[in-house]
Length: 557
Image (tube, rainbow, N blue to C red):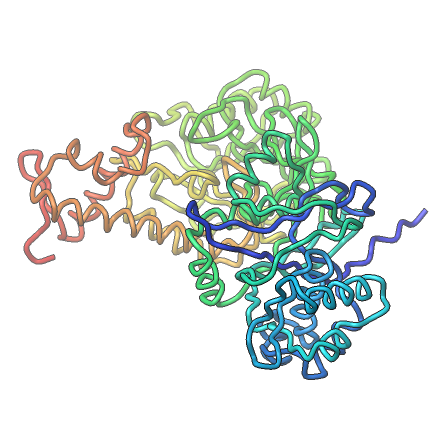
């Protein structure tokens, strides 16, 4: 039976903010426990667009922006201003607050007299469909204060949702001369509350909040007052849509947003948004990434590499290739053999650190597979037992498991590091050249910061859609991620230079807590290696010198 996906309805939500001594407060309404949607939850005023909203937008009832400007702000061809109108209408219907100017051009002040009673009557008729917002404006000689609403965010409900809305969130300073009131129908309560208190109540179970509300409150908690919040919206060049994705986890279904580690991978594996993809990497559990690529992590967890080293299996036919078989752990080797049904013919290694290559020898003993990669350099922490049957050159193409693979030499983390480009899928197996959730340690003498940065730029020139790291989930937007890595390394180098300027002359031990002040002390041992790599780079460039253990800026720099 074919299941028809729910229709996506355009909607608008208005975040009302006011200042208090502790920061900002926002208005939340509690929905009825009998509501069709979000029963009992605390929400911002909002709802679906109505056909009449467009009529209001085109009949001169709005103080601004105009239709063209509103559509441009929302990145839609037309109909943008209707979202501003809908936000005003829903706010009036649900909270009784009406963003409008009176005949004198002043923001509406209702008080408690005849105007308040007349507007309350219009509100009831508007909710009952007996009056339109345009008629409200005509009856009371009002213009909607849409110029006071500022575009803040854009949320699209995931495909798995029973009711799907494409919602634009606006923020506005609450009208000080009006008092909110819930309607005792769709909403049964209201309160002003700080974002942090609302989140605390939600965490304790005292308040039900929908996922977009939680994330919006988390964003709002960063603002000290309403003025800074509105200034933030005015400084936005564009608002990117947020579409949560549902994914499986061992303790139940999770909701992911962009920025969460598994977000991009879940979207690739489960493009229909059924919630069938996992948002966890569990050692021993296989993830099918594409028709020709599977991933299984070895059980070697570490704070730098997450749950374990990723091993990739390539091929959908009788012959299978393995990339980075991982450490020499019997259970992991048995799992690989079982997955490939003993048909492993090629074993590719990105580099010969102990968490990536030692199992190659065990697999070769069991399968006779060809070992492919580069020999280990003569340094500590290298798998000296890895002896490749085939040494690949930079740019060399091979065909393994029915897949066209091109080797890209990427020294920096390790001098013998190779990335492997799956050219048919534009997917790059990055080993430790690019990791998720952690920057790569550059450990001299084999690690070299100059070469690492050069290798990042080299990879950035490739036609790559996806990065498949040695640790972590698939990553999209390869170019942007490499830009971020380059920017991070440059920022750290700038801190090194500033520290040298400040301290004049300093040992590496003295520089370490200054340069890595943002890193927990228990990770200083790792950070010290990359600090040494930065200093060596600066020395090679003639920008820093070392004498008797003391580092200084050069006079010419």
